[in-house]
Image (cartoon, rainbow, N blue to C red; front, side):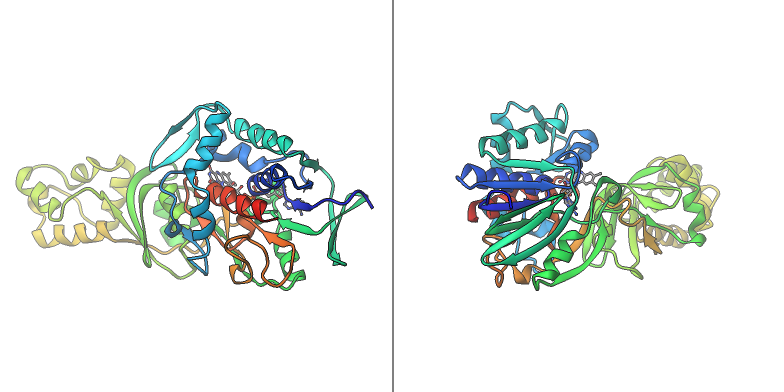
Length: 391
Ligand code: FDA
């Protein structure tokens, strides 16, 4: 067996890299293992290659979890500002894009290089490109088979993420390991994912490529961002956000033209009686969408010819347009996986399993899922930092 380490971190993604660097810089001998040939693959493709590395509006209510309080401790002790201090120390230029989302001006590669440099400062031993074999636990040591070697340490950190985007090497091994050690797993599901529409919504699929700002509501969740029609259904930030809250059978209520004040159609009729209904809709919506909505509403002609009652009904429909997705595009297209290792079995301060000494779980593997917009990386950094300091 190779030399003993103080900790083995499984998974060199955002959480694993940050955890390993933290523990290493605290003086621990850390081994970081990943089956991919390169570290941080999801970081590299994130944010369209510019990595939306945090969100300045990070708060626990922007995360989904069976225990909404669980993330408070780690998020409270490592803030977006803390990560930004590190980013700036490395001279990485950044900008706020929208809604508090911070991106690199240059490339996501800078974040991966920064994390690798932080690991190097902590003398972390990084090994990639071998298959992870079994994990055994006995005599106070975790023994991990990796390729042809077996490594041992008294602490093991599960940082292998969730199964979203399997073609990038994502796997559900975190859940297998958790169950092996008696931890429960909250049913994982694709999240931040495009939704599909059934055949009777074919009219909307014809709008593939059309985007518009909407307010979208599902149960108690509400987002205002762009929605995009696709050849399979709905996508765009508003839909990805709401998808994390959507369950089969739920109706999405979409407010088109969310800035219009109540009574706006009747007012438009008073002001411009000769204007066509379709033209009035088209002033705030892409042409093809305005045409499709007119068709669905069954309304055409000049505003003057339409009754106030019909206009009020149209306005109400446009403010609560129902879509009933029949599914999602699944893990192949999901930015994250919701659900995961049940937080009930973990300490929110250290991320250590309550009943299994030396076993930690961090990042996306855990049942904490952020909104779109840098929240998931912030959770990876914060949970990685919490475990790295505790090891
Ligand atoms: P992550 O998935 O990063 O890392 C897990 C590591 O474990 C990987 O390196 C993997 O190879 C390894 N692994 C998996 N199975 C293994 C096995 N069996 N054996 C050994 N190693 C194994 N978030 C955000 O905040 N801002 C953004 O801009 C984006 N953008 C974005 C774009 C796209 C296309 C995707 C798919 C996702 C995002 N995200 C995001 C989400 C973000 O990437 C995600 O939440 C974090 O990467 C999670 O970090 P983790 O370290 O937990 O898992």
